[in-house]
Image 1 (cartoon, rainbow, N blue to C red):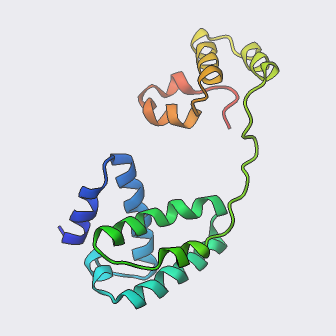
Image 2 (image 1 turned 45 degrees about the vertical axis):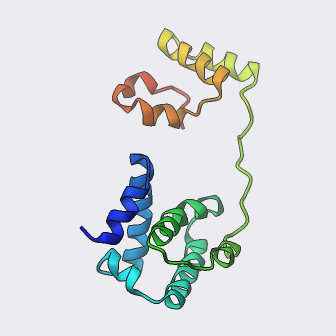
Length: 158
């Protein structure tokens, strides 16, 4: 295994973060048609700075503003783990402004009542009560309990 990748993978604590960072790092590597992770490290910092800036400007056209930091976090972590110091403050200035997410409000009592009246299964009613009381996101539950998918399928899922 390439040393740069080995250092990077060992610096990440959780499997979910490791998978996500590797996915976005691979997107970067494939965008520039680089053969290996070590080839990224072998480049000069000024060349790499330009590549990352160009990549950010390309991403601005293709992804949502709120996704930019997620796409770049893996690249930044990989480079920092391998002692490549770029001017990240400058790169972050290229990011688009975050947009306010819609629907980020709490469920009202009426919303909860409507959901409960449309569900007959007690497990689903219990889940609605749990989500309403705790503020846990449905997606977080799915990631945690994807083995019991039938339990988590709700009629109001998007």
